[in-house]
Image (cartoon, rainbow, N blue to C red; front, side):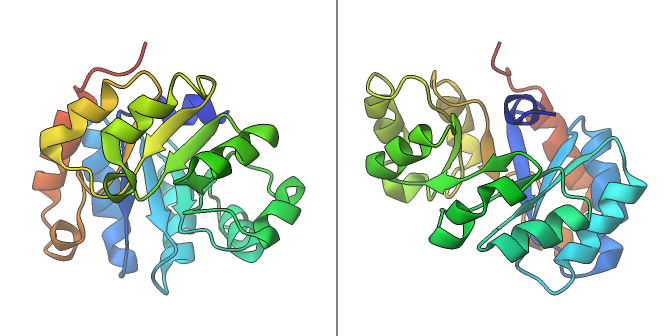
Length: 209
């Protein structure tokens, strides 16, 4: 599966932090029941890799990715545990020098025009815009579209339900990422029905043609 196909799976990619392995199954079931077939598990907990492995094996219909990739080791560990795609907040020299070792689609993060131009030179057409709201927001992406029309984005960071549609209406936005569907508190409180309802709402947002 290519990155454009991955970003086209859902208007919103749920970005989650899992702290207990028992959270995996009910969360996956809630997302799938709500029509969302993708999840990004951040490497911000001790059980993140185990969670990626469990989700990948037990829920083949769910496309599982790994987020907060800060190094080549992070990337390779995630892929070894079944991650189908990886996402970074930015690109450092370690990742830059080892791109050929990463055998799954990679969504690098960026928040500046210079970084975007460099990544485009390296062949990346799909980027994570992070942190989206505090890096210029919707107006920033509007402004750069005529200058860098070949780039498509998944903005993440600070996006809320009230302005999700505004982000998705941008011509250079394929989807958005964040905790709109499964925020930490709902996961910790085991509010699986609420997560399913949120996933159902998200899956009805008009996707890009």
